[in-house]
Image (cartoon, rainbow over all chains, first blue to last red; front, side, top):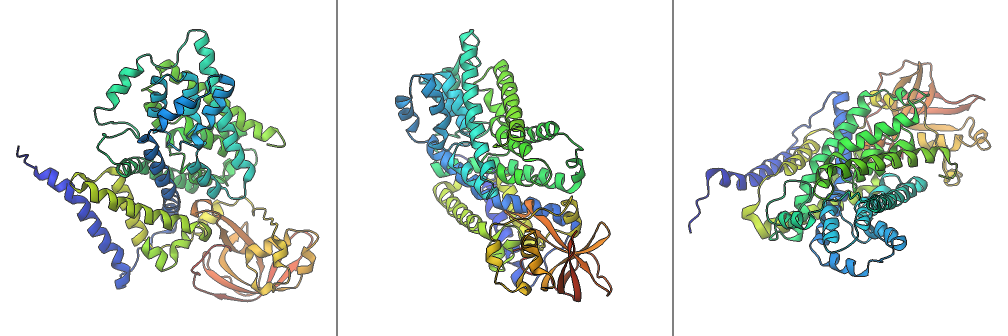
Length: 342
Length: 201
């Protein structure tokens, strides 16, 4: 049957060519001796910081998206269920370390966690995996190492507290279930069936079985890139206008700095494979404990994730888990200040 | 990206040690995009994320890349950062006229070693600024990218006229040490163009 392509549709498919053609011409301008724009110093500095964060973080975002797309479209999930230990004493730590072998971005792991539960995995295990995988994965190891080179203790703290807090959240779910309180939705099979049919509107969901792994990775990449750019802009503006003296010489307490960075992590919603570069922008302004809170809290609970968690948790469940996570992150961050060897 | 690499200005944004990651990522994105376009060209459409990437690319291309200004350097500095290094040994035996600001701060940070550098020759460049009423020559020290660049300074003592702030200068003189601080006694100060790599090496 003949399907008339509207002018709008035709325009949409030709727009990429038009934009890239224009972009290519502009990129060649310097070769013809055309001058580059010189901006006022303050404006230039704000822009320069934004661009440097985006340039540095984009490869890590791409790596995370590619790895995530590959895992989602393979048979790894089925294999995992088979080998999962039944005993929670072994099962929960196993779930917490699973992200090392399943490098999935923080929005991509919700469908995986849901698949695990629908196929019979205990919800406590799936919860632990859900909150540890965004931190304990190779792309995040790599980006954190690059951003904080030489800071081995800080590097270790991020992953240690990510591991422990995810473990604690699994224990929390077990404890709640013991008293008849389920934080997970009851009709997960129904939700799972629906999510494969229509185009997803949230986060990094599959956009249809016809998409290749590469196509899926690029879809995720381009969905998250604006958030990275927004986070970079917020960082740059913060650096440019918030007085440094506010954070030094006792003007603001550690607890306030930690809570401020946790709030920032929630709002900015940057992907965990790139958030280390955002955090780096605050390294001269806030204490390391606050940076750690940003890097542990953000991958677990942020504005983007909260929306996606609505697919698997009840509203009460989201509130309780978010509160427990926030408290545990705050305590962990304060511990790094008070305990000498941390 | 291609332009930044070929004219060497990528270093204004990214530490040279991590540029290979950025370049590899750019190449990877290019080939992944080609692969997707080849498979499904007719369904390709412009998303908000793609527009963001395009805007970033255009900004990188059309805006002249310069190091952060003195105003930002001052805003980022409550006090001169503490610089220590396990690589002090690699500076022993090198001519002090080859030292940059970072090298000087490292060798002078060791109380047991600093006296050895009194009256030694100084020849370095940086941007000029006034900090708490004191004239200084400074550079930004970048670990990863422009977002984390922190300023480092050395005080100057000079009888001639001072240049404008944010001007790049070449300083020649000798390092003087007192109990409280170190400073450069300047014998010659001249204006220079900003270097290709404006950060402390």
